[in-house]
Length: 379
Image (cartoon, rainbow, N blue to C red; front, top):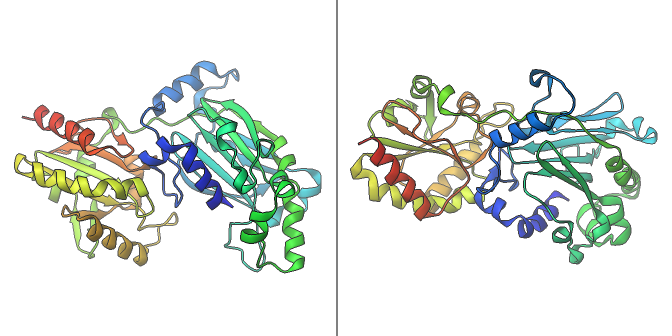
């Protein structure tokens, strides 16, 4: 289900999708360069919260991919500002309900889905799709009648902490036009499993109506004041051929290094790589180098994925990248406080941060302007 919703959102959230991808997600949940940055959102929440709670006591908007489960009859998504009470009739079916999602500093989503006992890893049997965006989202823009998504399918839930929330009433969607479900979701299910899924799907609107907002705090992005340049230089990583290196092996030799964190799942990351390669060639004689960091070789549990390495090598060859590319460790990603991809740091030869981290892709002209600026600043 998420695949078709992502397709629809691509046309309505174009700026977001074109500039970045959500942290570690295989779907394009992204940042918009015109959106508020994380410190803006923190200010909004701090100023407007009516709870009177100390900020340290608030749950934090939790960056990255996540999974959750039903606990005591509730789906606790307080890390993205939401708690959902299960209807009484669903509480004895909690073991059949899965929750997954992804969060950046400007977008979050949670998918509530039926766990097929014969195929428990398949998350496509969605019951509710809940999304939160710092950008205003018009219900009219989300209507996609070709897919059976009409206005009454989309629930505008209002705002919380600077985010705008909406959800898809998938029971209404199915009742209005079951074509997509019949052909893409339940086509391979036997009648018993189909009945079980559709029973859970029938609670979609009730789950959405049971959503309540909770106070939360957006962690601030990494800035110059808490940037440990020595720690950056001392990170020991591997390249895509398995050779052990340190970040200082690259950074220390350059006047300016552009460290570009990217993922093989991230279209905007890949789209900008050909002209990043061109820019490095054009400015390397001035002491400039790009250092790529592939960020999805290690999964959320820290497992090394050989197939992602092969994907990364194919992308590098296809995009003509000649600059070095390393594998970002889990520790490095945590150190960098990555919230979305691509994220780019500019550092000098000692690893000092020259600009705030830049989230999202840019045009060649925009990157070139920044490169000229930082090279001029270290002369």
